[in-house]
Length: 364
Image 1 (cartoon, rainbow, N blue to C red):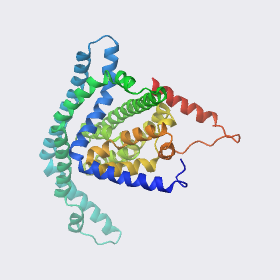
Image 2: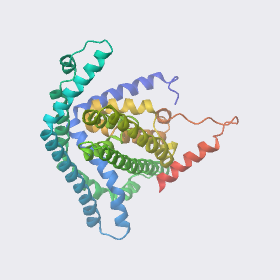
Image 3: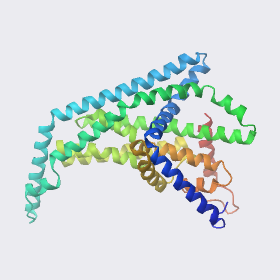
Image 4: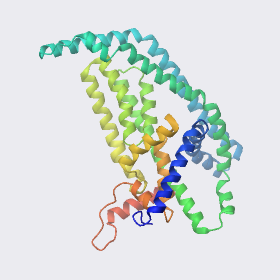
């Protein structure tokens, strides 16, 4: 469908999107936990299905997946509780370090002929406000974890349904082409989640090791943050580096902060720009502008859960649209810039190879 020649349909579609957005925002208390449960179930389902294929009964396979999810939730909750305790105990030390940095910065500015007192800098960056902000962030994470009991119950039911979902869809959808497109969409989204989870885990591990080597407090927390925010392509890894770099500046000075920033840049450059595209293929990519706008949009509609899951949600919508006739052009716009084509109109060999690599990863 050409958007330029069907203005009425486009306007009607935009109006429908506005209504859907209003419904999503109104239903945030129910939709956000359900989406989070769907995401956890989608990540856990390959393990459950693999165990079932090896002959394990459905109940035991689902229980194994749930045990893994519960262990992860308990681990995250314990880490947040310990981090809050450490932050509270070291609060006087952090405040003293902020004051020392303000005095050093004031002296440096004075050497340049700029008269700025430590009191002026303190009004710009009150240490109490900075620590309160960090405490509030950790407390917010703790609230999310405390509400995960409902999420885990939803995950359990979703995993049970996942073991028979394909057979149910085959009986409901009689059109073979529609069923094939639906399966292909599911495979591509599964491939995206598997690769993204693996690369996010690698990012978290290396970021945590970097912070530990640099003697940064709460290095396990920064590893967890790097793992979670890496699900937001491009932008999330940058946001995850900010608190660790600031804490490095606070604890050890500008040299350590610069080294941490370069370390994060190296980790994200290798994993995000080299390893991840090779594993996914261009077929599973998203435009950088779409990544940013989707994070803002889903964060506004569904809160922190929406911002965290903006990448997987947008990836699912893009893949689904690519398998439709009237919305395929939107799916193309959501993806990365296509490779140049040969003069005869065919795709270049490297483009075809990248697309086929992404397809093979989706089927695997």
